[in-house]
Amino acid sequence: MTLLKIYAFTFCAPAAFRKRCNWLLAVVLFLTPSYGNAYDLLLGTGEVGSFSYFSGRMVCRVINKEIPDFNCRIQVTEGEIDNLTNLQSGSLDLSIINSNVLEGAVKKSGQFQFLDINYSNLSILTPLYARPIGIIVRSNAGISSLNDLKGKRINAGAPGSIERQAMDLILKAKGWSVSDFKRFEELPTSHAQDTMAFCQGTVQAMIIVGVHPSKTTRRLIENCKGTVLDITDDAIDKLVDSRESCWQTEIKVASDSLPVRTFGTRAILVASSAIDQKTGYAITKALYKNKKRLQKSHPALSLFPVQESRKGIKGLQLQQGAEQFFAEN
Image 1 (cartoon, rainbow, N blue to C red):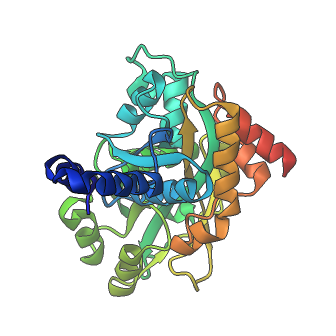
Image 2: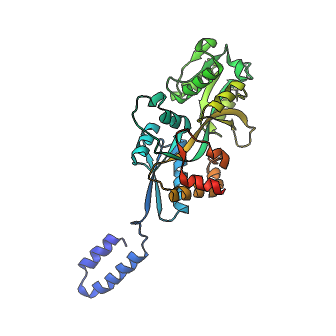
Image 3: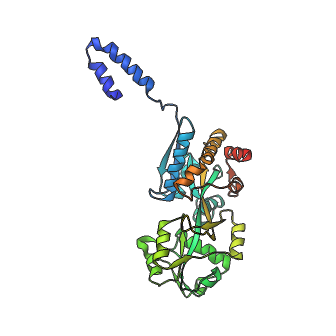
């Protein structure tokens, strides 16, 4: 019986029943969990269906399971800029932000160069998962190294897309230009325009950015005779060393496949100034305590070794509670 029904019954019942009903109501109220003192946490993620959204749900589940009186909830926003702005203003407590976006926000570069917002009040809890930059090449294209891409037909991604941003990093690192390719397409991922061009042989290579293992990437490779290019290259190594938002990483097309070396960014769990040291410590401890559970939900969501987690974005500090946790472990 709901509380509303009990209230109605108590009000309308004859006097003879009211004592008994009042006693029943007291018992129900005593046994019903009280959320009045629960500490609400709003976690900003990407759109529904994205890996950011999936990861946010898993993070909230861990927090709600491990930390008493915490109520973590997902808040889907328009994008990472909205997430950052809402974090900065305190409308969000936590958010999952890609490291290159976070670096741009702090350094006021790229899409942030005209925004007069200071993000220095944010802090980093921990990197959550890698976002590798991959290059898929056709098996008959004669491409076995990054240098072999010159003179070939490639899809670099639509202007402004994360694929094109990744390609621009590679071009800058190698000192290449568009004219160094036989064909330089800018096809988007929408309606599978990029994959159709690859499968039909219009392009011999294409940029992919995402989380692995990925069923989509595996199907593309199997159905269109492709392979993931191993990016072992001195120029890329220098790029990674010079950029705080980049890491060396690997791509595994399937859980049982051999890893291929590449580089990429990371999705980082960022905290607003409302998260104090005690809360930051509790969240970080809960996540690393449940590392196997998170990894079981998806292999990419496996967190990182403590020393790697310390690497952050210049201008943003590691959250005090996270710093305490990593110091103890």
